[in-house]
Image 1 (cartoon, rainbow, N blue to C red):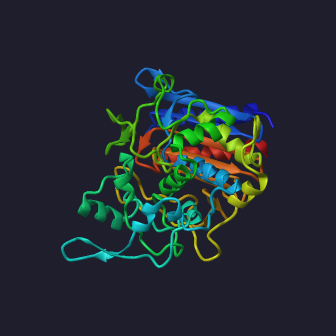
Image 2: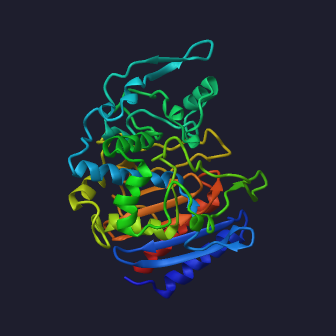
Length: 394
């Protein structure tokens, strides 16, 4: 497959519309790929005042970090160094301290009890362990207010020591599970998570602009974070930056990267684990991870925007059933954009979105730096871009 003029014209128009029409986006980059090469690469708007958005602009990628952390977990499982179904506390003893939240006492303190069964690393990757996020769960938001516990964006160990919302394995709840999975990786390897990723994922794939810490070269291409105000206009969030020397490198949200680098990661999953210099994952591992791991009873639910300055209510393809793999959302039915049933996808809090359609052999990435999540203009144009990719290949 090669990029046709029809895709270039349609995608360029979508990007121009995104940054030019109200409620406008400050800057956006979009890229699409097949299993071997880039099909489209474009950017529009500004990454900071007077500096244009480019395909090599560095962004805080938030929860698109999760799939990369899961890849590191799967590599260790392949090597027999990590058992996905063993109690994860065997690797990270702090998990034995976690309790289940049963409610709140009259004085506002949480009522806790021991979990019915141990948490496994597979549960962490599937988001069935029981951890949540205060952004999307009112009980967690109340808990953090009552206990004055720091948010996970602080990069602290204390921020991870939150109770479960249910017994492990009994439901699906989007939360800090992958941050814990990153701690499992560190325990198994004896290295910081970023060092593991550099050695085992970034270097083999040529992802030289991705990491938990900003290098001087990355900082020179860094996009500013924006907040959409009540009037709809995006304004720069002065001083916003994820912790550069955190106590914990958060596997759930802590990476900075570029669209170009993330496309290299997408190609890994399109190509059955093959990298440009050899295999990064085995084909059977990729196939297993790309399969619904929730079973027939559980489904991915909509995410309520509890903290409205950070997220709207969010759901991809409302009304369509969605499952979860290791660790991606899976659309169980073909999507209206053209995305095949069984495709992999997820997103990042600052309105970053990606999809990996292994059946059609194509994937894509859409990146902005804008709160709140599920911004209608960003998400709507991201889906329009995806639709344009499939139409160009029809």
